[in-house]
Image (tube, rainbow, N blue to C red; front, side):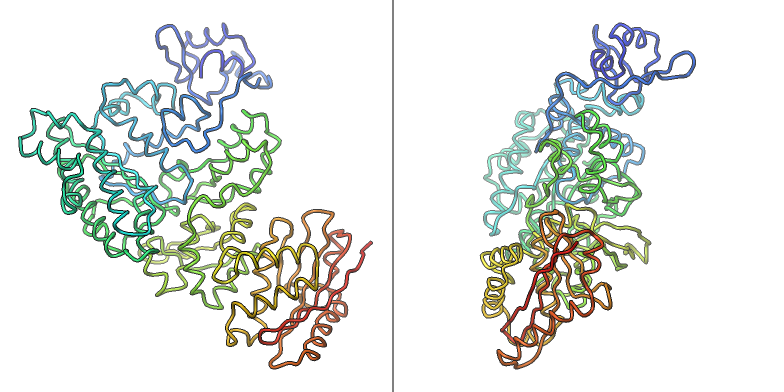
Length: 621
């Protein structure tokens, strides 16, 4: 920050800040020309008595805009509010693994961090040190600054390679690789390269090479860069697994795996022309042998301690951001909605959603919803066993359970091992690890739960209510409206329509089936109700309870019954028995204790593809 910004933050004059800089009393302060620069977040120096005056910080008159969707490091740190993650560079240089893989959920800052690494390390004619002089890395010493602008860099991002066929996918990969070759156009006329090498460069840069050439292109480009610059390059590949997921979903998995295996092997495996490699993705994909034989790969998953604070926002960073935007009193609400992730030993907030929250005038909503594809999650749930569905129901109640987690879970494993759902949900950001113990090898036993309110909402919307092969969207909306309006005739018609259109007769033999189905419908109301199931209340255990989150809404109690081959009259009687059970066992006591103004009681009876509902509404004091 500038002297002017520091003076406003510390409640002192600009002249006094200038004097403190000259006296060397501000750590990390450095001068560029006539202007002093102070690292962001630096505290006001103590006075001679060792005190800091308790002056309320003065908010800047013009606040920096929020970096919504900004993944370019230079743009982010120059023109927007930037959360300084540059100490990630120090941590890497302290360890210096040959190839590093960072797996994190979508929208947790992977691309921005990779662009930060590129900007720091890349050899260029531009003086890129100006983007780091006021950042934390610059005050770490000459041994770290010596690596700035030292290496040629190969940078590829596959985050937008989302196509339904291998032909389109390959064409896009070819273009991305060719563009990166053209970015290094110094190679076209390099005196360090032979005529043959320059010809090979030209074919790859102009998209006239064949597929085998592009499979070997990373190895080729690193060789040419090493020869020209006399320094082995750094290779950065962002969101490497996006094309692989598309291949799995759309039927060209083996083809894309074969291409990627050769591409990465040529560029990363035992490559003498490589200084360092960085990759990011959501899944590790290790067992697919995509990194076959790559024994110099250092994996940094969400369960590992290293680099844990550099993807996403820490609590301290969120507090500072809230203070900067004049919303310190909103911190607890931000925690409730967007905190709860745990990477290694660090509590992490979803950065995409925190930024969205401030941009939305501090009104919470599920900003993370629909920021990526959920095809894999849907496939997992399509093959889920009753035991898995019961556990997923447990999560919706706000409870946790212990399960086996494999951070190297692979796409084909979905169909062969339905229990892999928990591993997918965890690495994709839909679960948090409350606690974790390494079981054996690289597997873990973790206590898992939903992280926060946002994921509770996203969970129901993206994972349950949008499974159109189970619940057609138009029908889902019809059922949602009927429950919301407590329109019992409309709900009965919609339930029977759903039963007739979508389920097999053989699915509908047990009450547990109907219970799970109704719970899924209720999940669509998660933004207005807190849903609980199979909990003790009064003189027994109710089936489903909906506690309203807004005072104007009624509470809802649902009791389910099921029978085989029942007549309409028998089904009607059974629904009345279910309703009577709610009254006889005083299930409404919890809603009364929560000061709900009224409660709607519904007895649901099912037989095969038929349903009947009996209900009444009770005003509570």
